[in-house]
Image (cartoon, rainbow, N blue to C red; front, side, top):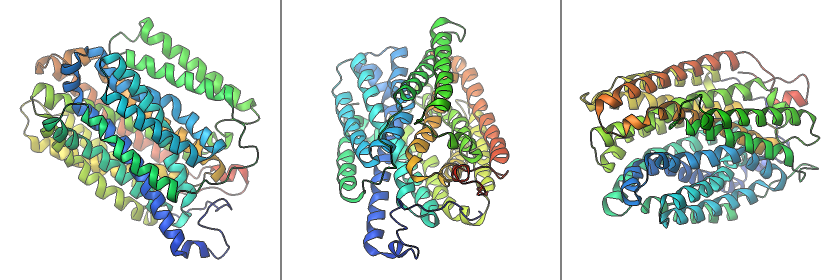
Length: 495
């Protein structure tokens, strides 16, 4: 990969002198490692929560007598809260301090997790899942920006690869951990497990993560922009979620989507006039950042379909135990972990477009393989699909993240991280909406009723990953305008 052209700023704690003596300081290295550890624990916890709750859905449905529609909201309420609040959380971090907002997010997430575990009915559970998502939004929006601010350009790709690998480990461990917990304890245990992880993350963050510097005037928050973006993302995600139970042209689906798009259009117009925009215009003019966000959105549209449908296939149709379902996901997690660690090295040797496009196409091959699975297909076929999918996303996630963040200026890294992660959450909601239209048929546990929706949704997911590869070649290969270069004419990103 061509050398990173982003210029370190004075706010970067690792490059404090022209000679870079700070980078060689043992104390600084320890602090950077601990900072990365804190961000990895937080990301691990967020990813763990996604998959561990998926495995627990049948138990929750039985014990709380949750309806099919409300059961989807256990997942979608969390995703909706994340999508709506991630951009706002990133902007809050830029204005009021990333460590402060990040710590607040961990506390909210821990409180929400404990409240979910104690929920007496489906209404309380969904409400506390929304609260949990609000805390997760603050964490997810700022982990990446804190890493970007802490690590110098020459070691940043490796740090991002580690961050992605650990997050992927949480994603893969979630089903297995959920299966073990559900074997010996009730469904509430999948929420209680977050509390000790939160305590660890809070402790390390308080000790190791520096408050960071804020640029002049950064305490001014674009309140109209924050409100418009949150309302727009909330409404669009709500409409997509409702498509699981209603036709796309119906009022419960079409009305919130139209309202949400109107809010987002108003947000875009307001941001062009605002003296303190929530999302700096330079980010929207940066080809690499916009392309990376689009790849995230499209690829996670595919991934959410795989997660949801394959889990239903093995638990509701083939009647696997939660533990067996969880252990099967390790076939995806192991190659993800290895590929994500390898991605940092590949980024230093090959163009970003080649690495990320390879990941997209490998993931597409894996998802297409999974789309061919039937109730009688040998598991070795599913395992092959998992391996390809895991390896593909292991290359895709660190590469996309590094391309998106490599030229972002430190004072706007929170907004950039928030916007990038919001695109991933919107993709997740879109994926759930596509397959949700056939959710009622899948709940019968009958393969004939389930098969058509399964094959169609997962095959569309494979097509989405091919489309992501096309976006990579169009957006990453062509030299574009970076966020730094917009502010400083004459400097353009490479790769």
